[in-house]
Amino acid sequence: MRKSWAVGLIIISILTMACGGAATVDDYKAAFVYVGPADDGGWSQAHDVGRQYLVDQTGIETAYTELIPEDATEFRTVAEAYIEQGYNIIFGTTFGYLDAMAEMAEEYPDVIFLHCSGYLKNDTNFGNYFGKMYQPRYLSGLVAGSVTESNKIGYVAAFPIPEVIRGINAFAQGVKETNPDATVEVVWTFTWFGPEAETQAANALLETGADVLAQHQDSPATGIAAEAAGAKWISYNTAYGQDAAPEAFLTAPVWDWGPYYVEVVEAIADGSFVPEAYWGGMDTGLVSLYELADGIPRNVEQLVNEKNMEILSGSFDPTIVEDSFIDNVIGTVNP
Image 1: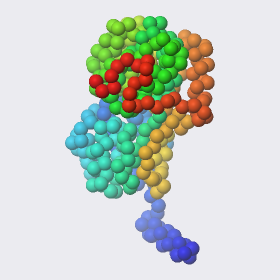
Image 2: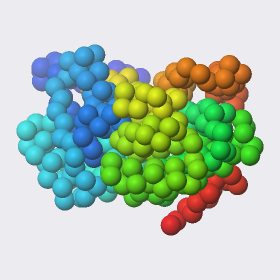
Image 3: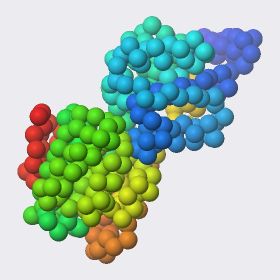
Image 4: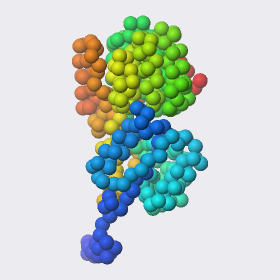
């Protein structure tokens, strides 16, 4: 058996050399499809910063298309155009692309499809990737609970799906630790990127007396509304939002997609890629809490740092609840 294995390796080596050597990153082109603008200051921009990091680190050729809604036909049109141009890695960066990408993976076995936030559909050329965003959301809740004076915190939320509900509950868990009397009220917009709807939801929460707002959307509209009302704001996705509402900005749970993109593309190129449902936590650097704004109480800053270290070490993890709201959240899971 050992002799047969050795002979097999020799044959593979000979065939590889005859075909021009092993594959490299230069043999691949990666296309990214975004649900929002590439400069939205949030989710899509975080991915695009990751794409640029990938180019800087590997030299791979990339392209992107922005503002593609979660519609199977529209996604397929864009992805097929890229495949015709020779792109053989397709990154789809929103949940709603899942089914279309899974179908295309069956149709195009020589193309690698990597879907953000969904789940595995096959084990050959389809992978998923996401992060444990609930961890830094919990930390941001510690901050929100400590600064509210009205004990009313508003949360502008996108869609009532497990990912979003999990994040709201983790945030509320943090709020409750620093302020047991505070509540978190949720308003749904049913948008990922909808500045007008987000502004309306934020203003509705502010009118109820909320003096701190958090969000699960892709634009800084919630922060702009908070600043106009003299309230505070927990941003999301990137730190770019603080430029839109610097007086309201407290901190932000943020993404850093670049290192993951480098890791997975290099694995594809060297042949070690194995489709998986990647779910990176704060220990991987994929998710983290951005630095705190000035004026956060010193004891709260120390608590955030302590909990941050506990999460990184694995000695603590916020409780995951994604099918209902915990007791200090006001709202409905399925409105």
